[in-house]
Picture 1 (cartoon, rainbow, N blue to C red):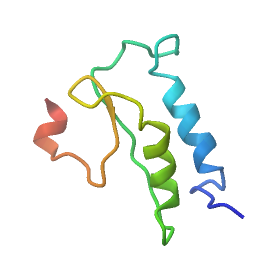
Picture 2 (picture 1 turned 180 degrees about the horizontal axis):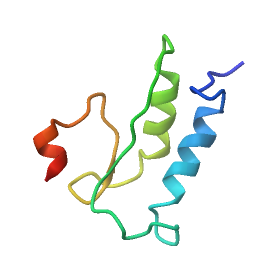
Picture 3 (picture 1 turned 30 degrees about the vertical axis):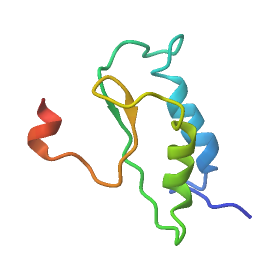
Picture 4 (picture 1 turned 120 degrees about the vertical axis):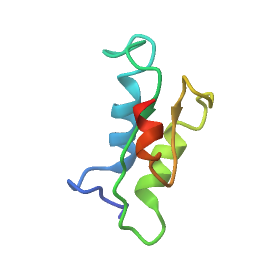
Length: 80
């Protein structure tokens, strides 16, 4: 069986759902300059975080892109 997220959801399905909203045509398209997903991952192999990274692997990186990181930005960075 695959890894389950915090709410016992399929990580790949959750990642795809979150990605769809800020994409062109999504409910929040163009609403945010930067999107950060807080991903709680207690699996040994980082399966939940990996699902989010794979789902967003084809997105451009940079200040206006959706990004995946192992650590959260510093509070000053988050305020812009």
